[in-house]
Amino acid sequence: MDHLKIAPIIAYIGLGSNLAAPVAQIQSARTAIAAQAGVQELGFSSLYRSAPMGPQDQPDYINAVMAIATDLSPMALLRCLQGIENNHGRVRTGEQWGPRTLDLDVLIYGDQKLDLPDLTVPHKGLAERSFVLYPLFEIAPRLVVPGKGPIADLVAACPLARLKRLD
Ligand code: ROI
Image 1 (spheres, rainbow, N blue to C red):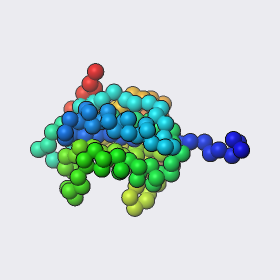
Image 2 (cartoon, helix red, strand yellow):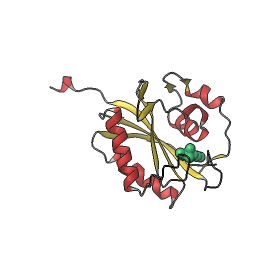
Image 3 (cartoon, rainbow, N blue to C red):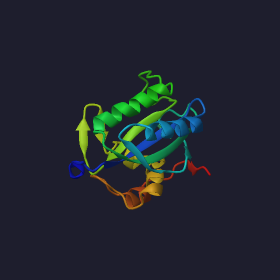
């Protein structure tokens, strides 16, 4: 029955943290994502330090992007990422742009464009966020972002802001 298997989808996850040892949060999230049933890690960017987008009276963020192959539906993947956020002490204050121990976003899900109540793919803010575009470009330089165009063009049009790749 092998021929009936559905090919996994390639998806990209954005990771961000600016509280409670952000580098450790991101590394632990990577391990947790890769350990999920139906998820296989394909790639992981460098870690980047970025100025907060939104209120400035919060610490700098650590950001990264992960490429996965997955059999999970978009909503199943989202729920799985929310579970990992909760396990990392994420407290949902209702403050939209506030600091967080761990933020996991479904940035891209194959070639799909989705506008569900809880999930928009590709991620709405993607084209304006250097802390998403640069790590994404690092691991997928030939990617075409559905509805938005080649990643190289998006990177070229997005100011670096205060983004620094960590070594
Ligand atoms: N700012 C940066 N630099 N990185 C993030 O991951 C991030 N995440 C957020 C908001 C509050 C919008 N700002 C951010 O959710």
